Amino acid sequence: MRSILQVFRNGLLKTKTSLVRRIQGIFTDATTWDEDCYEELEAALISTDLGVDVSTRIVDEIRGRYERGEVLTTEDIMGVAREDISGLLSRNERKAEIRYAEDGPTVVLLVGVNGSGKTTTCAKLAHLWKEDGRSVLMAACDTFRAAAVEQLNIWGGRLDVPVIAGQQGGDAAAVAFDATRSAVQRRADILLIDTAGRQHTRRSLMDELVKIRRTVGKACPGAPHEVWLTVDASSGTNALIQAREFGRHCDVTGLVLTKLDGTGKGGVVVAIHEELGYPVHFIGLGEEMGDLQPFDVTMFAQALFE
Image (tube, rainbow, N blue to C red; front, side):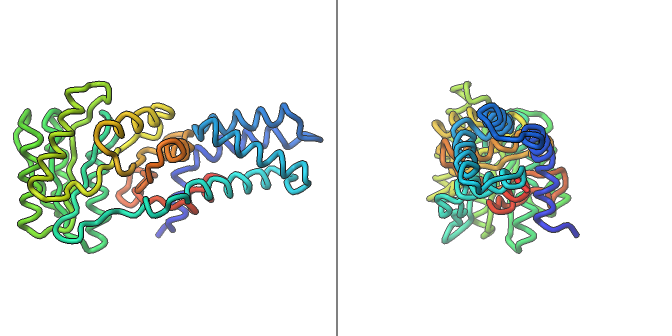
């Protein structure tokens, strides 16, 4: 059985390999580290979508340590980056704690743009919590996409997790209300609400999320307890834009980053956290059920900057 660290290593391999090769190319044959080297290093870090501010900060730290004789090799560079990223992502760790309901079901609303992986993420989260011994329900509130309800029902059958669904083209808020009321009646621990993918620029669709939130709160006071934005990490800087815009409309409380294994842009985790302060709760590191993992700062930094 793979260790959790190995899952992180495998999932971040593309980002790490790209970064290591560029850094080695810059410094391996350099007799002295000059300003050209540092500019290339900054460009290499930015290419992973760490963000300009974070990349500049890391380069400044490396420059200072080099001048003091504390950094001499490419391995040292990776060590400094690992320390800095760990420190940055460890800020406000309490915000990264999931707000479980004290009484009744914990309602998690999943939102995001089309193709970000919400439905699959919903199933993977159900699997994780079921493995943890919690009772889970899923709500199929993507009433726009023809195959969405069927897809979630298939996952529900595989996982032995009940799915509350309505008719295609029906009122998503009504489905969410029924699902929340059902979760309360069944004394479920977790209700996962899968919503339709929507572009953050479509005001009418964003307004629907506000309606779903309000309706869920009527069925279960205090719900939803979490609103998680599912972001495709391979979208790079667009992921940051999505996080910024969804946060303005629907009170995002955290992120689930998907498809990190298929991109060299794994640094976007850091950029989003640095600008918006949203905690990253889970990251998708592969196709298997066990490849959606709770975000771990130490493992992320170690896998990216070994």
